[in-house]
Amino acid sequence: MRFSTILLLLAAGVLAVIVGCQQGGEAARKETMKDAQAVRKNIERPPIDLAQPAKFETATFALG
Image (tube, rainbow, N blue to C red; front, side):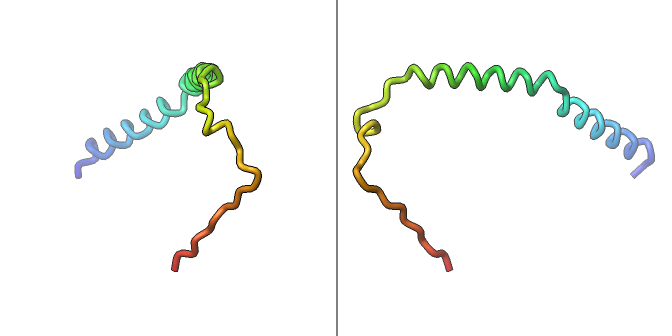
């Protein structure tokens, strides 16, 4: 490859890292998650999900 091609790819990679690490995106994502949690609290759960058994067990399966 030519030097200019390598330099262009390197610059594009650095730019992608800088854009991906901006703080504004993280704040917007957290705000969206807060909105989703508020919506989930208002959803009515079906009776079968509300009823809890007196005893429950978990199963594990060995692989190999």
